[in-house]
Image 1: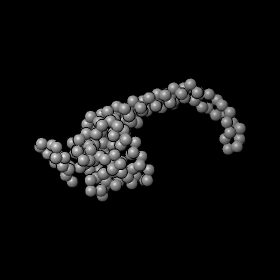
Image 2: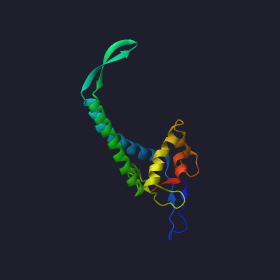
Image 3: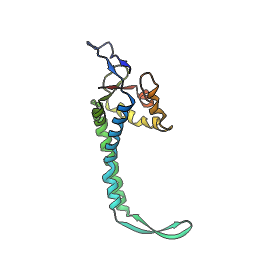
Image 4: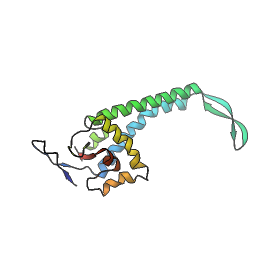
Length: 166
């Protein structure tokens, strides 16, 4: 476990420890479940929407298929997008003020790698967006923290953050 010292501008520097893989995975899981919950209402509307029979082709044979009616499909997509956008805005605001629900539950915090101060909402958004870079090559960017001296994932490196025990 590595110690991180705040910058020299602090009058009484404290030693904070980098968060390990297990607690980061736990926080990520809790926050992921909340993200999934934000889109459930839109998916529920889609599942319960009335269907329309339309001509279609299945294995080069003419047939009829049941599809969601266009109005209900639009409503479902709107609810899903609005729900997720609201969640993402709320999440970025929460993290920029300190911790997400998952981070609070598991006692970790995302901070600037130089000043060890909280990061703003735009950096939180950038960090969330760049998580795709960590995920795409078989999750290698997430696993990178296991051998990185500062326990940084690729998205941490891209936006200049570390994750510490709060």
